[in-house]
Image (cartoon, rainbow, N blue to C red; front, side, top):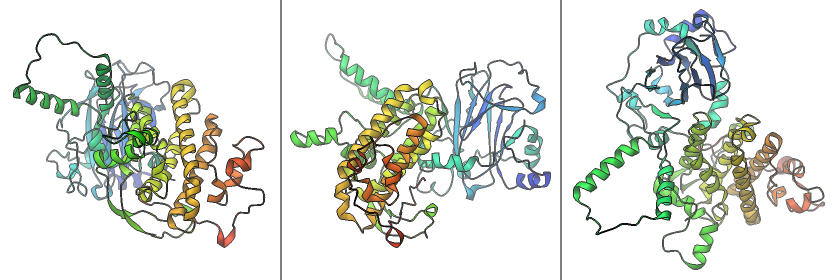
Length: 511
């Protein structure tokens, strides 16, 4: 097939890279099928996989042509054309996510498409839902007895059907996946013995079951006669069934936005946590994502044109896993068309947006939740910018409403705590708060330009950074600029040596 990159490679360079690069081989895909990698989709003819894969997480998506006959294009011509309408008669999409890490390069993963079953052939049926500490440094691939050994000669024989990884794609892709880890894939999807997380458009999620169970409880069932006592065999059978079901479901983090308070909460406490989801977010990370530990929380990001400087370290709750699930759910529903992932995506957005006290300097978790929020704003911005201009209007207008409402909720919550950050001026934590305001400004400007979403600036944002006034005034009602931002005409911004320095979290960060 034709190269998926505009930059041709010399024969000498290609031969050299054959022995030092990683590959993904996919056999059995019929001509006219779709194949995608890292957000780009093509219609392929003579196709065998992708060569010269750089290290990192890659997401392979494929949808078979139900017709065995060849397409109108000559399959021997090597043409590969961008895919158009996703409802063009092709089968449901299947996907495979896998990390290719530098310490495992080069390596080759070989998969075979079963045309009759419209699925990958399952040569590695065992799935793992967790990666041990030992596996954190060594891949399932390196420890698996089923690792595929592929010769250079075999790869060269497939070369005509191998597409080089597209130049420039990695930079666009990395900002969409930088919080996803191998543990995220294992926990949510499950990984086989080769470290591959295999998923398709129809795979349900644990949230589907939760909603079904809630509906059944709401409707209620009348039982006649004496209830049968549960036997030991029933318990064993139920547990075995649950294990089987878990392997066939997406297991995202569990939380309940409609019951976001601690067990036993009453009165004022119940009222507070029903509105403020901070307790629910902390609980979700601590209980279900095993967040916690000590790590560096504040570094200057290289793209700020400042030297990388460590500021401080604290025992923290690690919210990075939450952002990893946010990124993964977005990819699954936008690229794989797995709409069981959409409710968890919107719920995570709402969870972060409807939390308020956790972003206050008075909250015990603010040292980790605030950097998480800064990263979240950049992640959301890049996610939205990756979509077509007409994505919401043509496909999901209701999602546009949900996201706009969530942004408005977050704007209100951040405005409510903005004044409390003024007493933190001069601290490293305040510098992160400045970055939150800056990223909020950038996000709201972009969604206004791209989708026409009107979201106000954070009240008091003028006090958080030297460049926020010019960016923010254009997005508030005429005549209300100063009132909206919380500043007076006579106020001046510090410049030069006294200008605020942008400091960010290196471990989370997405720009």
